[in-house]
Amino acid sequence: MARYRDALCRLCRREGEKLFLKGDRCYTDKCGVERRKYAPGQHGQKRKKLSDYAMQLREKQKAKEIYGVLENQFKRTFSHAESMKGVAGSNLLQLLELRLDSVVYRLGFASNRRQARQFVLHGHVTVNERRVTIPSYRLRTGDIIGLKEASRKLNIIEENIAKMEHRGLPSWLEMDINSLKGKLLQAPERDEIDLPVQEQLIVELYSK
Image 1 (cartoon, one colour):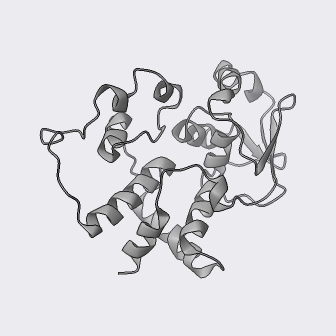
Image 2 (cartoon, rainbow, N blue to C red):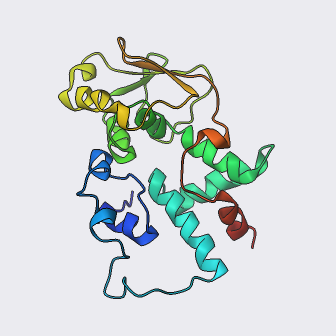
């Protein structure tokens, strides 16, 4: 499957804000947005006014970049969000947050969603004591997310857990630090999702 393999800091600079795609580095002075506060490319330092369509497109691209989702998968998720009760934009973010790789990141097992995706693909993550290797697996209320016994001793996971104070644990998740198991208490509401995304612009884009 195709994946973005270029420098992640370029994505943050394109959006003009931190998307926290590189984990701990984003909290230091080495962050690309802190060092070069303009868009990448030879015309990056030129200011230009965005049209309504461009603003809507940028919000969609931003959401895709944050969650590491490709175009067709993102479009399918939006279609599902539209068919649900409630506000389509909030439903969209809720569905993206309930992805297994996103919850693994939120629990602090991984420093960023890309790393969380790799952990899932490599079979380190379990859901209700069963190994799941599908990053897009949608979790349900009450699901228990954990790590394989051998994976709990990995240095990289221990380091990630120790640095969890950078992000904190969302109110819709519960974590047992001793057993390294998390629980999905409920689907997150929009005000519980701390993302710099204006989801209404995405809804407007797909409504055309």
